[in-house]
Image (cartoon, rainbow, N blue to C red; front, side):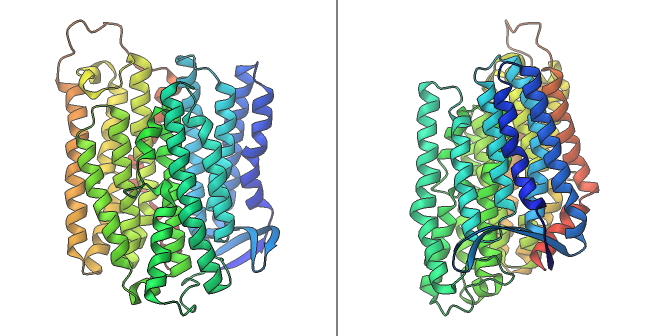
Length: 489
């Protein structure tokens, strides 16, 4: 890949960061504040998308911000893998911004200016992670994301929110400082660089398998945003945040940043060949498999809809890591592809949960009997999102899960195929009852008659993302091409 020096990667990061300023300045003018939010979100999509043709043609962009450590600059670089993640995040931030207007206004939430400004900083950090050229740059943006999302997790400012916020920071900052940072220092000591390099940088280090195994485990658990068990507890706790926060940050940005960071380590710090040679792929797939199955079983027990979605997310994140750990082209492609397919499906489900709460005030599945007849668009969208997460055709999730299953067969690890099939059945078991109760059970006695769909600004985004989950089955080519380019440069 040939990289050309360009300021546009930096602009992609800065547009929303700088956009936080007019958002804060418009605190007393809600319409102007939200106009700024949508304008900035649209600009983010346009800037990121403008880089896509060059990447698809085998090129890329690079911009050096500063030289701080020998051989390790703070540097942005747009390659196929970064482009893949940035495209998903920027598109879905626009829909989340639109959804936020309907949700926050309908509930007359306090602190809306702080909310929109924190969101703008968080998406800047997310794009920074996507376009990082090395581990140091990624780590810095990873930490900025952790800090900028804290006000969003604690938005309600009550005792539960503050407790959840402390848990969030303890897990996310604690693991990154105590585990990921030492792993990064060991990597630099062994390789003399932290650059993301095709084939990895540790292959020529001469490190023993035990040392490599230690570094790998430190990275796997150090990037705790990925939700690998037992460092997953922050994610269900963070569901105390407003639903748009759960939708984007804990369904798309925060959690996917954790997965993306781990995939960068697997692909470009270790390299698949090294991991295969020292038999460390089994470490990755074992941890991921256990997380997938345990999280899916816990999801079955959750009556709170957002907590059920949270445990579903924990399991689905490990699909992506499982695919990377297969160390086959199909498995790694499927793992990366699942970032996009899951993002569109899961954000739809969170949007629907928020719409139900806005329209009815209900949080618990056991209270939602008969709502599908009164909110048919919301429940149909939930059905679409569920089918995509389960991996059923004709929805995008089928494409990524098919690739994962193919990767399991290619690697000769049929136990992983069993994990995938078992998990998909569990997905169906915890999603279908929600849809059944909504459409086929009568409403509880005494249920108010005036229940209807949520406001249009809630309804429109969830309808579009649900349709996208369907469309990605028929037109996955852009994401599929980027994923294949990332796996096989």
